[in-house]
Amino acid sequence: MNYKAVPSGLESSLRIADCLEQSAAVGYQPSERAKAIQAINDILQGRSTRTVDELLTELEKCGEDQIAAVRRDIRDFQ
Image (cartoon, rainbow, N blue to C red; front, side, top):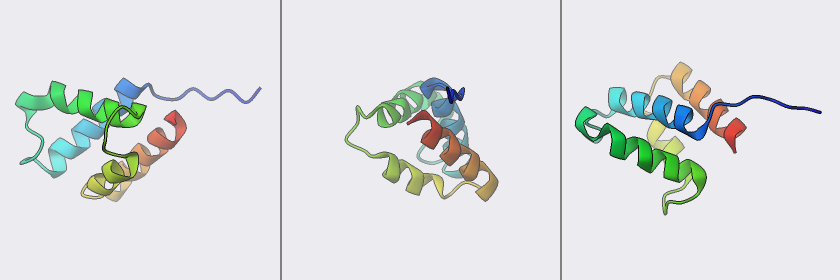
């Protein structure tokens, strides 16, 4: 079997929220962190009108090292 442990949707959502809070402080306020994490998790789970591609476009504001790790997490999760 080719089993690979991957981060949970929540773990990925937390990393994405961290990145977005650092790069786009206006749109992602720490006081709204729980709502942001839930919204990100909904995107990853396919329960949102926003797509993963839209989220990845927004993540391009993050540093290249961070975005590469997040992209890998998202790809592995899906």
